[in-house]
Amino acid sequence: MRPTILIAALVALSASPAPAAAPSRDQVLATVTAFAKSWETGDLAQFESTLDDHLLWAHPGGTLDKAGAVAFFKKWKSEWSNTRIYATQFIVEGNRVLAEYQFCATNIATGKREAEGTAAIGEVKDGKLVVWKEYYDHTVGALQAEGVIPVDEGATAFPYPRSAKNRW
Image 1: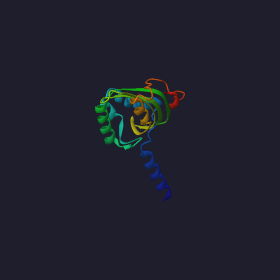
Image 2: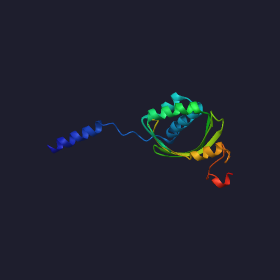
Image 3: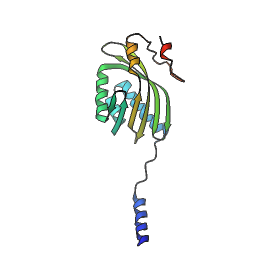
Image 4: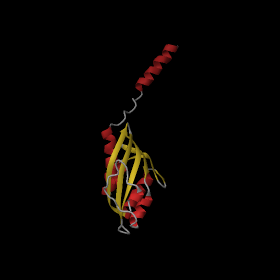
């Protein structure tokens, strides 16, 4: 009786699909790059194509699922223009990525340009973002809009960002 159970278990295991291999570094970066490019171009279809149906997007102020991310993107496009993303570095391990970049855009209502340093941790599955967790400080953009600190667009933040007290 035991050999029959063992054979049945082995047959069941061999019939199971093999676990998916982790994406390559290039595949992870291609997903993140397409995601970033969609913000620069405003391409909603490209943006949606990078999001997993079970997306969890966390950012200062809350979390979004895929529908919430799409709604946020549409609202963003109506309030901001000339978006530009300057990538600083990517660290990829398996399907996880740490991205450091500067996110810049112009507020349509005020005409003021903002440039905020950002870091994000993401996970990619089947060429789509499953997790995107961003870290940034909105007070930087507000202070730039008021003219208190400069809009240092495109300035490298590596190996470290300039301290706030050295910016004005």
